[in-house]
Length: 99
Image: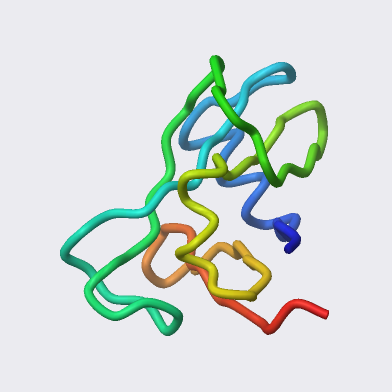
């Protein structure tokens, strides 16, 4: 499994969330939402500079984006892609089957 963050999404995280080098962002599962990989569950994010079990991670411009081991089930064999949607002014998630 991989986490892919677009340049536009990195810029959004830096400007809107005010992330700086050394910060960590955790992607986590939420009940009561929708996603193409899990019915009735959605994905959220939070700034979490004290991870417990960073199972999958990627670092871009000194910011670490990660998923805890307890949330890996959500992805069900998919990679996570994070992009920025300028019409909604928010990040969007998409998923592709892991190779």
